[in-house]
Image (cartoon, rainbow, N blue to C red; front, side, top):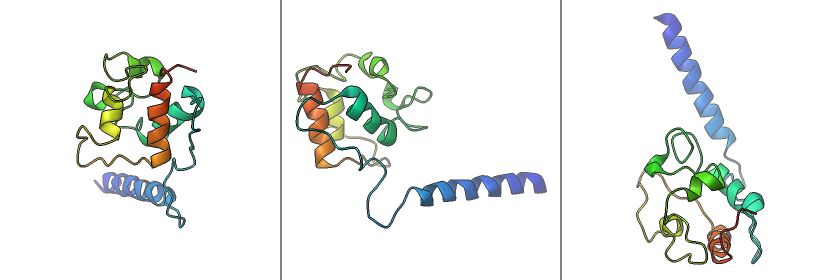
Length: 132
């Protein structure tokens, strides 16, 4: 019993350390360093790194839990469901509707995205949502 309490306490401490380590004094959150260009958006250089930091985390849109039956861990996983991404049509793409707030996302999970990132994902879809 005592060993279980020690393990549980150790796990809680590890979670707290990880949570505090992700914060800094600049007011930035992990992922803010991902800056999308105004055009020629690359899936591998911009879109997937953004998803890896903000969406494809354990318990969210990774391969195991697939929240909302959606994985954002790879281009193939993201595009396997019709309508999530409609190349050339960002307004109709369900992914953009979720991240820009037109469709609700679970209230307990805030979508952390800045204007540059939102516009970058929109541009990537407009440019054909290529796996580049």
